Length: 278
Image 1 (tube, rainbow, N blue to C red):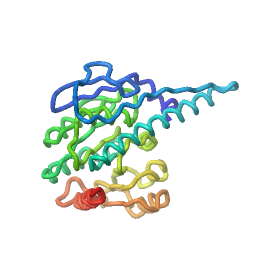
Image 2 (cartoon, one colour):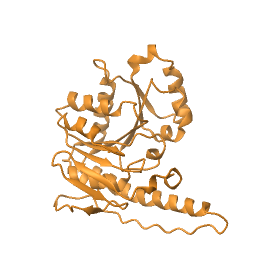
Image 3 (tube, rainbow, N blue to C red):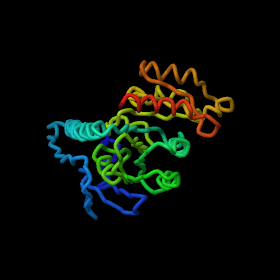
Image 4 (tube, one colour):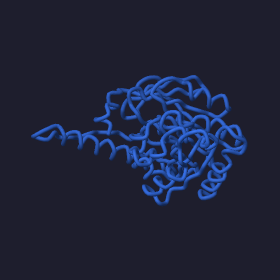
């Protein structure tokens, strides 16, 4: 959890709207600390976070556990408000998670170009730089970058702030690209309708064994770079077996962001999820 891994050292996050060039600083509660918004759109409500913890008399372990429980509890409240806001407007919200380099951004670039007739909004999460948001911006999709600093994941409150900047239209799709990390992002609900885990054949086929919670919470696993499978030491069948041992209900799609038609299985899945919202 965050007080153990050190990501709680980050004192604020930075949101950058690639359409307007506007920068917004957020405190740990998701509230703006500089350049306040004057938007009159239907906003996702703020959730004020207060953490009450009492250290154990024998060690700091009780203090850490209570702080972690409180962080998750308050994040879950914000996530539920996000979810209700999305559902009320018929918006499909998807949380893409992976380790660094699995190909999330490349998948999104191609998806946004090939499905350009549909309305997408993107929240990009990284500790630093605008590099991925600039790639998404080049596709024409509205995008907000959330730089988390020392934090290793996005929070429901940061998504609330980012969505206020994007102001997505009803019946659209909001794609959240989480910080590259297979641990903490699995613990923090963002209010999404589905969690999508991207893995690649250039990683180990034992990833579901090493990071079981990430695969337990996944609604969909994309096994990316499948075109490279003949050239690397990776067994797709073994990977899928391990993933289903952790999550018997998970859907697994073999995809390639670099070959013609390589993302067609994902597009069919997306259309099915949109149909469920109608």
